[in-house]
Image (cartoon, rainbow, N blue to C red; front, top):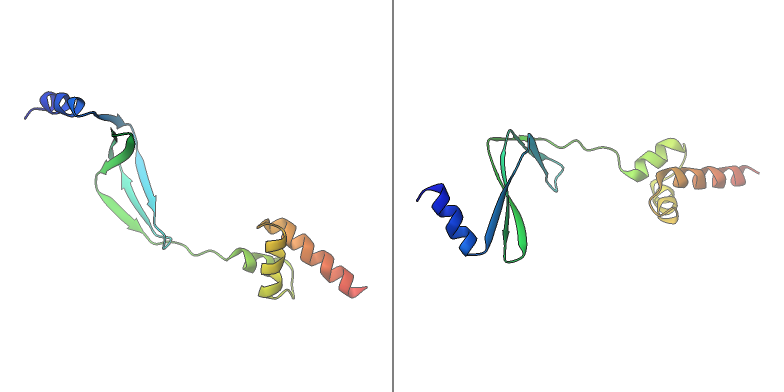
Length: 113
């Protein structure tokens, strides 16, 4: 079956496909590693109201880099802060690292007085 016949058949079945120009596709996995596809062939497929991407090409896997947790960043910024204190401050600051540091610094200043 030639590509034109295939496209016509897919159209009759309500399947739309559209090529997407892309130079690189990166899939970030839950473990922090990445699948990287350079010069991929990417197609957007829409069928029954659902959209999906088809990515073809050669891929390489990159190991993830584990950075410090937010609590560790706060602990390093405020010397003497425990992990529990840092986590509590982060929760109080709704995850805002800078605000959590300020909360702990204010607490440390109040404790010294």
